[in-house]
Length: 195
Picture 1 (spheres, rainbow, N blue to C red):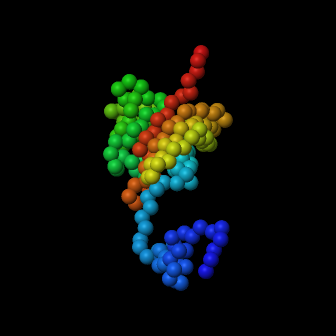
Picture 2: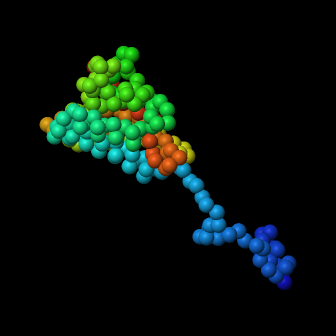
Picture 3: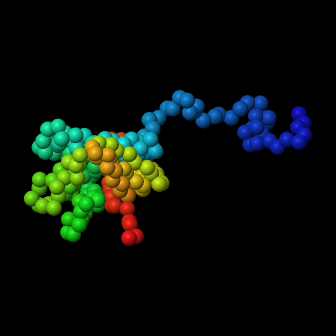
């Protein structure tokens, strides 16, 4: 058999010489082995950001409709499900902290920031107890690498009187071994004003 203007690949050459095709790899449609993929996706990152905002509104609304004790219980559930304090210290720098208590690497410090009422953190009045009514975020960029992701951008919080507070926000997320996306980095600050 003569072929002109044709370059034979190794697989085609094997077919031409033997008259049979080489054994192909198993079809991807029918995997024969279990696959574990713990990579984080953009959709999961966005869902975690949205869930954080909705949780903040939930704490605030619970405080308005009930009391600080019930708001604290909601905040504890939020921290335990959204943040990675179960894995180790979280790199948390809240918006309205200063001095020796600027960084909240422990669960206790995070809870005090959100709902106050902790004598070890006397300057905390409870950021989540403010009358927040709406939440939105806008990412400037998202960096994803394997089971971790970083975001930077803005969060806009609107209170019940329509006042909007915009903060610069950087989050770091990690997908744990159970597949849950958790916050390992949370840096928040008010935008710089040159005046």
